[in-house]
Image 1 (cartoon, rainbow, N blue to C red):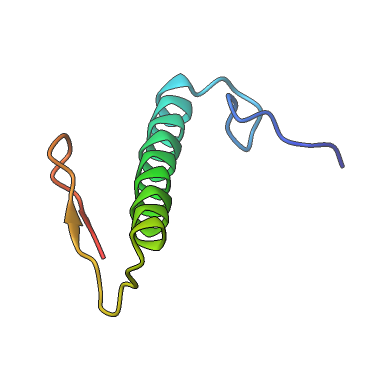
Image 2 (cartoon, rainbow, N blue to C red):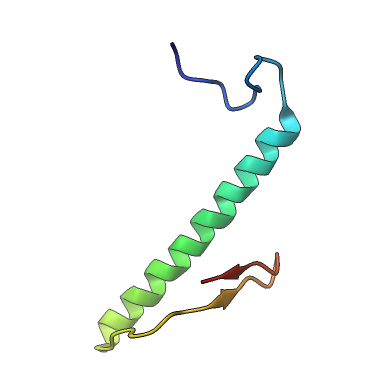
Length: 66
């Protein structure tokens, strides 16, 4: 069976609302991971190491990342 089109639901009908929601969630996840990698990189450059949990709150969405 071939790869499923992300713009369509499991029955094959166009589902633009779900597609946009998934796309936006993926963007948010990517944005968080870029920030996290940047934080670790900056700590490494400065000669520091993160020992504990980092909790971030997204000002745009209010989502808490742990």
